[in-house]
Length: 144
Ligand SMILES: CC(C)(COP(=O)(O)OP(=O)(O)OC[C@H]1O[C@@H](n2cnc3c(N)ncnc32)[C@H](O)[C@@H]1OP(=O)(O)O)[C@@H](O)C(=O)NCCC(=O)NCCS
Image (cartoon, rainbow, N blue to C red):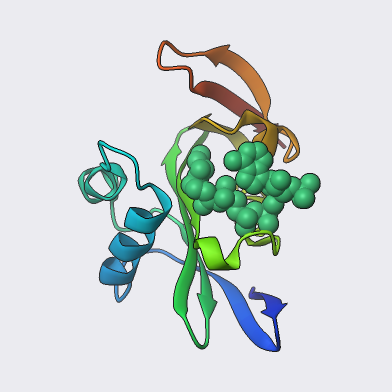
């Protein structure tokens, strides 16, 4: 299924695919913009951890290309949501929430995340489990 968000008459489609085929360079660009602070290791970690078959969710603008991204690293009970990012010029349109909601609706189970923006995820039905030594928050969404 494809969802569409419109910004100034330009449609942005939220899609799902099961590989990074055709979007590696754009994903690197987007993650580098969205995670600018050192150590800037979100893209290298994606390359290390991603396996073909992991569900990838993208927001694609006809004019600007890839403007939103997230993937799920599945496990036997659900999975971990990774690398959520929306290009700064396309924030506040609901793309970030829609990407997460699509992951949740396609994957019943226990979905985990480690994040520095717990408030954003609380609005999406995630619960805080604990704060980690680096001050990020481990959260889960029991999604059945
Ligand atoms: C977090 C992020 C994905 C949100 O994308 P987005 O498309 O702007 O999000 P949406 O438009 O769906 O939702 C916007 C809402 O999230 C809230 N929000 C956005 N960034 C937030 C933050 N850093 N902390 C808390 N809430 C935040 C906004 O206040 C807004 O709330 P509202 O709906 O009540 O007005 C985007 O800001 C981003 O890529 N940030 C950098 C990378 C990052 O931090 N990723 C998450 C790490 S787990």
